[in-house]
Every structure is written in C-alpha cells, then in structure tokens.
Length: 257
Image (tube, rainbow, N blue to C red; front, top):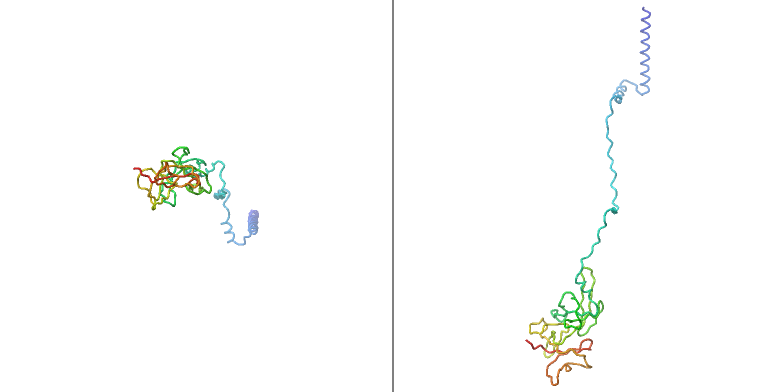
C-alpha cells in the first residue's frame, strides 16, 4: 500500500511540474519575464467572448457643399429682361413726319433769346390748309435751316437718351396776331410767336401786338410799301420777308379792343 501511494504522489508532482513548465513556456512566448508583467498582461487582456464589445458609432461624414458655378437649374425660368418705361413725349416727337403741320407756336415768354413752345409735346398734325396750322415740319434730326420765320424744336429723352429734332417753318394767316418789340418808330417782329388779337399785357421784352394784314407772294425788292391795300392807303405798316424771301408778311399795330 505504501508503494502505491508513493507512486501516485510522484505522478501528481510530475504533472504539476509539467503544467508549470507549460505556463512558463507560454509566458516566455508572450515576452513576460516576471510576475509584475504577468499582472499587467492579465489586467490589459480583452474581455471574454461572452461579454459584448462596447458599440462605437461611426462618425457622421458630410460631403462638402458643391461650389456655386453660377448655373441655374433648367427648371427655373430665366428672369425677365428689364424694359425701360415708355416716354410719351419721345413717342409724340417720333410720330411726326416731314410735311406735317402743327398747331404750335412760340408764346414769347422765352424773350428774344429762346423759344417757349405753347405745348410740351407735339400734338396730332392738322391740315396745312386750315387756319389751325401755325408751323410746318420741313426736316427731322438734321441741321435746321435758319432765317426769318424758321426755328426748331428739340427733345432729349431722359429714358432712352435719344434726341429728336424737328425743323419748323412758321405758317401765317391774315387776321391773326403776333408779338412785336417797338423802339421809337422801329418794330421788331417776333415771327415765330402767336397771340390773341386783343389788348392785354404781353410778355417782356415785347410791348406790341401786331395784326397780320396780308400774306403775299413777295415781288423783287418788296418792302412795307407793298403792303398798301388800296390807293392812297396811309396806314403804317411793318413788314418782313419770310420763306427765304418768297413771302411778304405785312402787319400793323393792333388797334382793336
């Protein structure tokens, strides 16, 4: 009995020694040379497979904003081009043609240095044969001719920047009146003006209302003496040759009430 028990104890010692040797071999393979390193290794060991690994959410990655290329989606309508507001005055000027006659005159309020037209924009043309006609358009947007009974009317649009220019010749009618400026016995006729034939204050520097007594084809060398309407006519006339000398305009100082 003693021998068998001794053999069993000896076998357990050999098994224990073998186990220790195996452990030492594993530690040597892991690079652990002492008990302190073994403790650290045990403490750093990963959890057992029975414990779930903690969940670490993946970081949210945002794509960078696409650069603004200035292009628009084809689904969006293109903006409407801006259209300047119409200019009624410019349209009125552009509606006038060469040969048209207008019921327009100089009021005289601009004095002797400028023309103050009776309306702000050209009205509809009138018959050149009618008594309403006061000027006739002879050219448009060109250098206008000068002379007695000639002038021009220009307009520059603040909307478009364009300028329209009407060249005008005065149309005279017997029995109508114009303004005059008297100095002594001499009277200068304001040939583009028109005024009512009645005694009333007139714009400075004018001081007379002149009554048109006749509009004649001018003979050679025509002057106020050609304005007499009958033999022995002692009326004092003041005359001017207009239409480049082709027409004799005869006037007297208005004497009506």
